[in-house]
Length: 386
Image 1 (cartoon, rainbow, N blue to C red):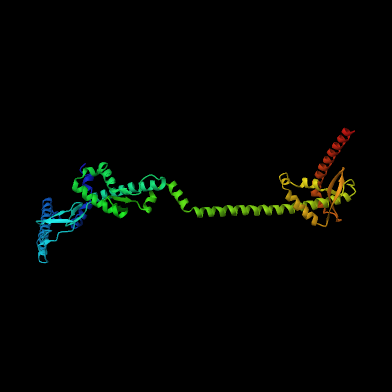
Image 2 (cartoon, rainbow, N blue to C red; image 1 turned 30 degrees about the horizontal axis):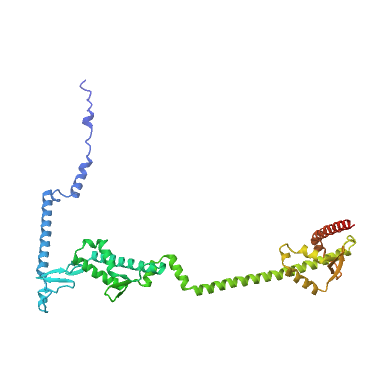
């Protein structure tokens, strides 16, 4: 039992492990700053207090330096005091539109103090513009009514307008001095804008200029006056337009008339030529080589063209001058008629003949119907007479 050796426990045989943190601790201690490097809260607040006090001291010193270096404020020289160059070192001259007394500035009525100057009051300017606009509207509307409708006055009394303004405007809220000042400003503007005259009794009257009154006239009135001023030019232009239109219409009608006469003449020649060819052919042995002029006229002319005898008269003149057409009287069904006959031998082209055969058939049917009507009429007359 004693000879058997004892096994050593694992805890005794285990070798101690190395701590990795123990090896890096010297390096970390070298990189991190010490705790005494950063100031504490108390030290930080002390630093802020020092900086604030330094800023206040610097601002105060700067202000004192500027105030010591700058000149002291000067008072204004009295308005009734004749100052010299030596006096200007102790006081400033009184500005325009202001009164100075005991070094104080008081601006005149209608002006406001702005630093060392007296500038115009904006409300006064607006009120003056309103008054001038009211004068313009009142006087120019009266002038426009007189020019357009004959009612209204050309010259309007100035006092009447002021009385109307005094009773029906904001002027009631002003005292007498403010009213007089505003009235003086408005009178200056009205005098520049409107025409003014003084009658023998001392009454001032106002008149609107023509250039300004034009905008107050209605559109219809302006158009009527423009027409009256340019009546000669307008009437001449209208006469020229009407004359040119009539002349153009006559030229067009004359061209149409000449073209239509030539067209009818060509149709007569074509029809007579085709009729002559058809009468010479073996198929139409019953066809006469001549054509009654009145029947041909009624066939070719339109109903509205039959009312103009001059049209067919011109066609007959061309037919008389044509040597290819023979015009002679002939008794047809007991009546004397004028007939046309084609005298030139020859034939039409087949294409032209085919195109116009249908027209020729229609003419023959109409001629046949008219001859049958004539025969029946003659037969009835013969029966009644027997």
